[in-house]
Every structure is written in C-alpha cells, then in structure tokens.
Length: 199
Image 1 (cartoon, rainbow, N blue to C red):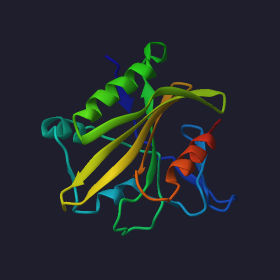
Image 2: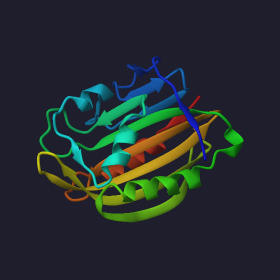
Image 3: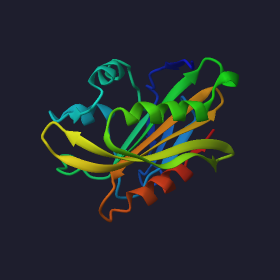
C-alpha cells in the first residue's frame, strides 16, 4: 500500500510578466503556461454550485470526499457560470514519504479500478503510458465515461490522470472535458502538460 501526505500550498502565485498566462508556485518549484482563452480559478469556487454527481458506488464516494485536497493550480476554459460541462485542468502536489517505494504505474492502475466502480459506460482509452517533460517522466492514463449529475444532465467525459515526480513531490495532473464537440480541449491539455517546468 502506498501512503501519501497531502499538504497545503499557500505560496501559489501567478507570474504577471507573461500576459498573465503563467502560474508559478515557488514552494514546489513548478511553472505552467495556460492558453490565452483559459482562466485561472480558485478551486473553492468549483463547489459553489448545488449540482452534484450521481455515482454508482456511494459508500466509496463518501470516503473519498472526506480526503482533503489542496490543488496548487486550477484552470477552467470558460468563465463561470457556464451551463455546460466546463473543461478543467488541475494539479495537486503530494509530499512522498518514501520516493524509492513510490510506484506510479501501480497507483494509476489502482485509480482505474476505483473509477470503474463510479461511472457507467466506463472505457479505458489509453493505458499507462510515459511522457518525458522537462527531464522528468510523466505517467498518464486516459478514460471515457458517462457523468450523471443530480440535475439529471448527463455528459460523456474524457478524463486523464497523470503523475510526475520532482524531488520528493508527486504532482497529480487531472484533466476533464466533454467527449463530444470541437472545443479542442484535449489538444490544449497536452500543450499545458508539455509547458510544465520544474525549478
């Protein structure tokens, strides 16, 4: 079993010298560049809506909801309120207790098992693959599923989960967008991931 410690990230900052599109966190030494039309948002604002998720495994969902999360950056494509599914890009840092025993491929496979029990029409688009970014190896999986909301709306979602380790910090990169339409969010996700720099 792999244990991770979640810590707060109070030292988040957006660099203003590059058209306000660059996020830099000096605490973790990570920088990311977003597209011009995307928006940096406070993660807490994503909870303002009264609309929730309908999931198959309610008990497990309750356990997950009790786990604290502290994303260091949260990026959305459209200004809220937005009445369709708003594409989102999020990075959450975790301090590793033991870097040597950390197994990102195993962790992602466990993630796939967990998410499969949450949603209908679950499909793995891409099994664990490796991508090199800024001299670090990023491990990524990509899935498609049906998201049901408590307001009876449904969305076909493409989501990816990626892990990259720098020093003793694991960065979890979570992306979500609709599986239909021509908003090119997936291409933009790829460009944002490739823009990541570590210091």
